[in-house]
Image 1: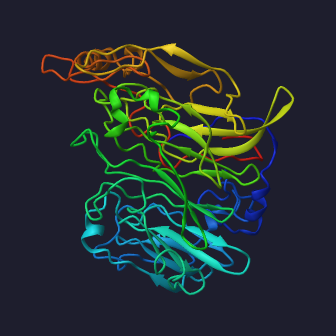
Image 2: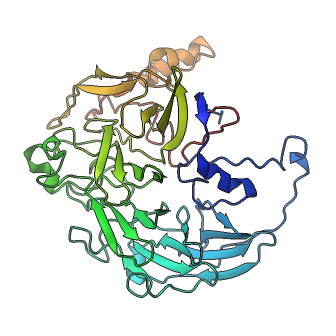
Length: 465
């Protein structure tokens, strides 16, 4: 795949970048703003071809079957690597220089783990320290938050109940502890002694019901595991945004979890989270209205969970354009003014850029009319947001002139095949599939993006996202 880059002018660097200067990587994105940048320069173009494998660590035995979809980003702290690994999502601590396993922790969750919507090793874990004590925090497949001693791997018994916070409880809703459709494969994020945990649901394009578990976001005390706050990603009566759910659809609709990574500005005391689509990736007739906070970027107060601001990228989504990854926090200069910015990569290949203090778009975002579909019972938003800058970093929409044209014959065959489908620009609506056509809607970018969960990074040396 080619490299997709968006250039931004940067005035200053995040203070947290200093942490990476000695080779440490203490949080999933390198720093809490998820720049995913390291200034290390020992490996370069001149010596890259001479690299050799220093050690290997196999994870096959860490679970009842070998891992086949390893996605973890290990952390490196004080010469130790920490990672989730294996099909039971064990936690391992390794000597970074030799690969020796220093300790391993594994939870056997039985049926609860077997029925979990997000299984395998997940995307990693979180590290916390108060300068004296060090902890590793992670979420099991069965949706339990575990605290471990980072030196020994022992359970921190004073956290939650015996080292465990059951995330299916104290969740402002009733959830089946075994079969409830909620889990997490992303990592928690820890800042100012607050552990913030999102939610993910079963992958799939056709839900079995219009009802589902709601993917609320919660903050917990890093020392005790006590719940500090809950942010309702689907508002409840009396809360901001309830009017965007028509016909009381808020009461039964679920999902709207934050299954990607989050970002934090500790100085501002704010956490930034990207919310997924409500229940029903391609049909939303049962949830009329724009449906806040589905497919939105939401800024919360780190200590209280109160909403500071939000921006909805997709009104009443019917394209599975979840916000899949962490927003990037950095400072940019626009028209001579330094702005604390947040830049959110998206599946639709737009990079939305805001003032992270106020939520105001840095460059205008235009609400433009989009096509209304004809699926029976569906509700359609008449407009969708289109950033005017930066330009889209991948092609959007499908048209005849984008089809293969190596030869006239190939172009003719492509046009014949595509004629059986509906095509159009970004936000072309889904159709009811019919044998006589259209069989469906061809969209670009597809449901994987654009940008998906691997997200983006920012290089302050070149000013490129």
